[in-house]
Image (cartoon, rainbow, N blue to C red; front, side, top):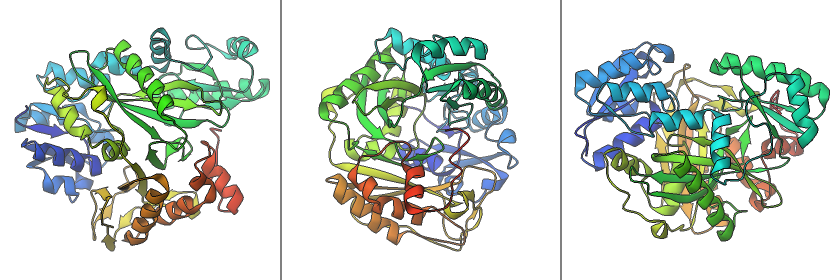
Length: 459
């Protein structure tokens, strides 16, 4: 096992990795920007190195500064967390060239899965169901029209190097195809420095289901069941649950087997997530693969009793998986609410600033992953998530009630948060029924005559 690990990230995920390392007896190095000097991950790491100003481009996104911090502290490996450089194949290569272990998949797998067109082709070859669409990137709207003539409307145009809803447009007719194609290209070029677009059939009213996998360096790959990430706004997840209320044991096995086949075909190693869209007929289709740990990994940890971060460390150190597929058991139900510093009544506008009071809930089956505390100043420069609240119970109905109780106990004063919004969502009869799709949040605001949420330019 490693003698020292540097964590190339900030916030709650940095603290989460520090905890896993400490339990394994591994000293840690935190890196931080000037804006994060008072963050808890800085306090609890064994060493901490300031790597630059508040702007991410000059700190958390600067490979040279991170590598320098690893070298001066004698770290042997780097855990990238999620976001920032976590899915940057060039950074993974730089780590290797500097004699540092990148705690994640090989650069080749990151590149293969990061290119959405190549990822789809890889899965198709492996026999994983994919959504009908273009074989590769599409040059212009005239070529797009020929594809649509074969698969029919509606279609969705996506950035080949994209993610997070950027570089996406839905077209339900030729006029929308022509206008949306150019816009999607411009957005893709601006967001990913790559204007390539591909086209897929747009699935109406799908569920968003993802499968967590673990893969070692010896060809062993297992899955840890599914997470349902259907509750989202503008393609950004708001809460996640496991198991999904619409996935049967038989469907779980089939989706899990597909995720494992796809990961093996891609030569994947370490933790990863294969994301699917599930339609109302029970058919599922590959959407993308995330080559990193997910924000929502705690819900899987709670229902499987498997420490995903610790497994990542063991795999990166060259250990074989000690678990087989038969060892993985789903026990009970878990749900995670992302607590963001945002004002839901103002179109979820960010709400940075001083937290004057902060109290986290507790009790049996309640977990809070956070890096903030009373008198902490939420910076304006980064993602607005300040905490993740996770509960575990014997079934979904009881789990929802436990989460409502925990949200009632969660006190954050001085800034706006999404706590009350989550309480409204969890109390909604449609959510409690378990029968909804990715348009649930927009539908919720329409039904309750809540504030407009700018549903989008994306859909």
